[in-house]
Every structure is written in C-alpha cells, then in structure tokens.
Image: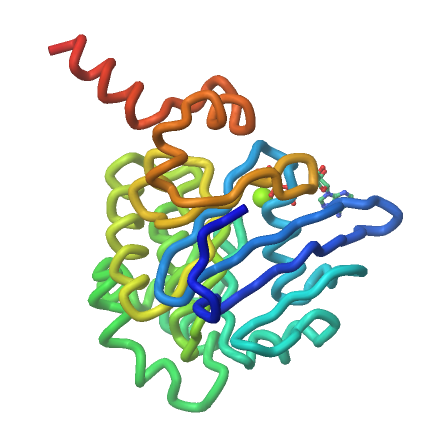
Length: 255
Ligand SMILES: Nc1ncnc2c1ncn2[C@@H]1O[C@H](COP(=O)(O)OP(=O)(O)OP(=O)(O)O)[C@@H](O)[C@H]1O
Ligand SMILES: [Mg+2]
C-alpha cells in the first residue's frame, strides 16, 4: 500500500484491534511512522484517531495486532513502561494541571531528575510565552497558551517519538501558525505522529498520511499525492474540507 524505506520505521502499528468495554472501536488499524518525519493521521470525528494514539501508549491496549517501537514489540506493556521507552503523548483538550503554575506543570512532567533543567532552554525557545508566564497558574493562561504548555510537557523528558492529538483545536489562526512553527522545529529532533483535523496545517507539516475511517485504516501514502486527490479527501474527510488546490483557486479568483 505504501512506499516505505525498509527498516526506517520508528513505529509500526500492525493491524490492531481495540475494544473499549464491549465496543469494538478499532477493527483494523495499521500505521507506519518513519524515523525523522511527521506522519499525520486523518479521519472524520469518531473515526478512531484518539483511540489509536491511546492504543499505542497503552491506555487502551489492543486485543489483537502488533505495535513495534524502535524494533521492540510494545503491545501489552503498561503505559508508564511504554512512555519510558521514549514516547511522549499530548492528549486532546489541553491536558494540564490548571491549579499549578507553568513551572510546576513542567517540573511534574519530568521522567528523570533534572529533565526540566536540561530541556528548559529548548522549550522556551520554542514557546517564548511560557517563559514569560512561568509563575502563573495554568487557569490564567489563554486556550492557546494552555495548548502550548500541554505540548511543552511532552518535551521535558527525552523522547524519540511524540504522539500529538489535535494541537490546533480551538486555536485562533495566529496561534495555529505558532503551533505549526513549533511542531516543524520539533520535528528536526523528534519523530512525530500527529492527529490533525485542520487539513491545511496537516498538509503543510506532514510528509506522510494515514486515513482512518470507522475504526479501519483505509489509505496511506505521501502527503504530496493526497493533496492532489480531491476525490479521496472529500470521500473520507468530508465535503467541508478544502484542499490546498481548491483554496489556491478561490484565492486566484478573488484577486
Ligand atoms: N470510553 C468510550 N466508550 C465507548 N465508546 C467510546 C469511548 N471512547 C471512544 N468511543 C467511541 O470510539 C469511536 C472512536 O473514538 P475516538 O475518540 O478514537 O475518535 P476520533 O477519531 O479521535 O474522533 P474526534 O475527531 O472526534 O476526536 C467513537 O465512535 C467514540 O464514540
Ligand atoms: Mg480524537
């Protein structure tokens, strides 16, 4: 289905099936994430994107299939053991401690003593706002700043792979731009599996894509090919999504 360089995948999700209670949520999901790149997972609301990330990190362990990270099978391991292998997870909806300061939020994200001190320069270069708001409690931050803090928490420990769930959700366009720049810079040092509904953002960041529909992987490949495939985009991602080509055409007709 895909054009991969053998042996270059940091993460391989191989035909996993995940149940939540009696519900068969993921029926057949496969995702490959090559080292050193951004792969985006696309799909309609309720398709199973978040459940896939939770299956990888061990919060909703798959009942069938394999998950191979850095050459090692990780399905069935406890979530904290999976995280300790070097996988950071940024859940949807700005998961931070709202009563705690920015500093405390970052300090609590340490996996090893001194993680925060080692990474603080890098984090504040990426998100200068967080340096300015260092002493403020999370609930004094704007939605965008909370989202940045949620991403920053995943950067405190040394991670080889980051799973980031809808970082642009509910953000104003200017903050989406900032978040995009931060993710782009991050990808220079860390491999990223991103869930993103904002197709413009997804298409500008990711090298590869996977589409999940109704608990199944239905398509994967290179983002440059998907951008050209208006029918595929509309079929699986909904008619409301505009491709870059369509936006460019609209822009041209306005000028
Ligand atoms: N705790 C749960 N109990 C029962 N069903 C659940 C539970 N969590 C998720 N589901 C169902 O599993 C399916 C997949 O949900 P999931 O959150 O993975 O979708 P998603 O692709 O991340 O959607 P969204 O774009 O809305 O975030 C949905 O039909 C959802 O209703
Ligand atoms: Mg989700």
